[in-house]
Length: 223
Image 1 (cartoon, rainbow, N blue to C red):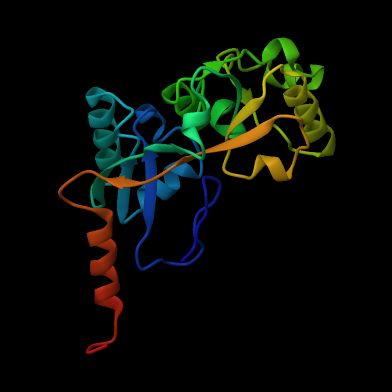
Image 2 (cartoon, rainbow, N blue to C red):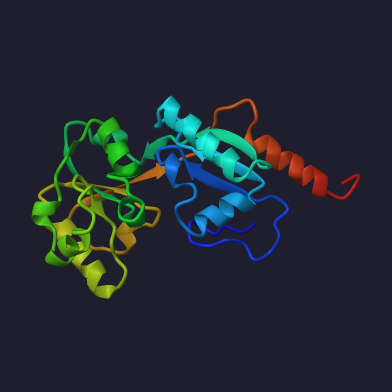
């Protein structure tokens, strides 16, 4: 199994090439490299976040997938967000730190952390008045990012600026929607609660059944 994230594509020919596309950003399917290349190479295209997107967005995402790669199987899936301790956030003010690339060049105003915090009944504190000047400068080209703090740590100095920015916000809890373990990288007085995207099958054709069939085809006869 090979996982290329969003910045690479395989240099081998996979037996089954699965690519995820975002129903909340249906027009982005062919806007970025190597995402477009991966989409065109895919055997299976999974349209994620169908639970968060509108019916029109989901339909557009599927049209774009089929336009760019008519031979691929298309599967719709939900992306529910889970929180480590959701019951402890209701009525509390929190700082949300979400995935940096999702918010900056990804164009999203918020990510999994914000979604999870709102669903848990927390009040989101605006981080910008407390942000370190280096973080404010990094956010200048992205005026759509206002409610959450992007996890910008592309070097020792920027990571230190992120740490100072988090520590300065007068809350007891930070909700982290980043794929990495934020608590392992920054030392702040607040507790850090993680939010994560999960995967849930939604359609009659499931990703699980496609993977099972691919394994069966490749298994030695009689095994």
